[in-house]
Amino acid sequence: MSPAIRIAGVTKRFRSLQALAGVDLEVAQGEFFGLLGPNGAGKTTLISTLAGLARADSGTLEVMGHDVVHDYRAARLALGVVPQELVFDPFFSVREMLRIQSGYFGIRNNDAWIDEILHSLDLTSKGDVNMRLLSGGMKRRALVAQALVHRPPVIVLDEPTAGVDVELRHGLWQFIRKLNRDGHTIVLTTHYLEEAESLCGRIAMLKAGRVVALDTTANLLQRFASHNLQVRLAAAVVLPEALAAQVVKCDGVDLELAFERFDDVGQLLAGLKSAGAEIVDMAIGKPDLEQVFVGVMNQN
Ligand SMILES: Nc1ncnc2c1ncn2[C@@H]1O[C@H](COP(=O)(O)OP(=O)(O)OP(=O)(O)O)[C@@H](O)[C@H]1O
Image 1 (cartoon, rainbow, N blue to C red):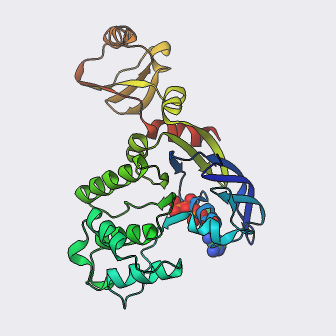
Image 2 (cartoon, protein in one colour; image 1 turned 90 degrees about the vertical axis):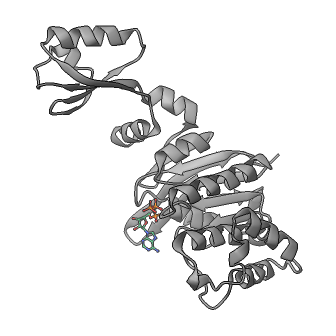
Image 3 (cartoon, rainbow, N blue to C red; image 1 turned 135 degrees about the vertical axis):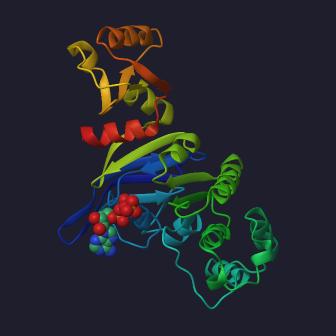
C-alpha cells in the first residue's frame, strides 16, 4: 500500500530565503498527522507544493502514490486542501461555489454529496446564502466543504480553527475525526497545541524548513516533557542548588519544578519546606505538547 503522502528531499527557496531546506516525510494511509512549527517554519509552503500550487526546487512529493508534478491530476484528485486564508469568490452562494468546485474535478450531478457535506458541517440553511455574507467561522466551514467535494482520501487542513469559536471548533473536530474514522488520512497544521495533542497520532515539527522532530504524540510527550509541581509561595526564598536545578519556571513567588515520578513530589515539598518556603497554593501539571514544542524548538 502506498503511503498517503510521501515527501522526499524537498527544498524550496524564495529569493534568499530557504523556506524548505530538505524535507523528508511519510504519512501512512489512515493517519491523523500533525504538522507543527512556529510562524514561517514552512508548513504552508510544504502544503502548497503538495497541492501543486507551488513547485519545489528539488525533491519529490506524492499523494497516494501519484507524483504531484508528473501525475498532477491524479495527485490533486486524491487531495483536499482547506487553506489557511479565507479565499473565496464573493459572487457565489455556498452551493454554487461547491458545484463549481465539483466541476473543476470533472464531477457532475454532485448535489446529493454536497447536501450531505452541508448537513455534516451544519451549513444546510446557508446553502443559498452568498459566500461574502457568511461569518468568518461559517466561511471556514464552507472552505472545509469545498475541500471535500471530490471525496479525496487525503485531507490537509492548514490552521482550520484559526478564528473559530469554541463551539464551532468542537463541531469541526467531531466532523474531521469522523472523516478519519471513515478512512480518510488527515494532515493538520495548527498553533493550538492542545488540539494537536488530542487529535494527532503522530506529529512532525518543522523549524526553518527542516523537520526537527517526528514521532508519535505519545513518544514525544514521554521524551521531551515531564510532570511539574506548580507552587505559589508566601514569599520568595533562595533554594538549595539541588532543588534549584529542578526549577523549570520561576516568576517571583510562582515556581514550577519538574519531576519524573509521583514519589518524588514528597522530596520536593520537603526541600521547599527546609528552604523556609511557605506554600500558599499548589497544583500538578501534566506533560503537554507545549512543553515538548518549546523544548524541541530551543534544542534545534
Ligand atoms: N510567495 C512567497 N514569496 C516569498 N516568501 C515567501 C512566500 N511564501 C512564503 N514565504 C516565506 O517562506 C517562509 C515560510 O512561510 P510559510 O508560510 O510556509 O510558513 P508557515 O510555517 O506556514 O507559517 P505560519 O504558521 O505563520 O502560517 C516564511 O519566511 C515566508 O515569509
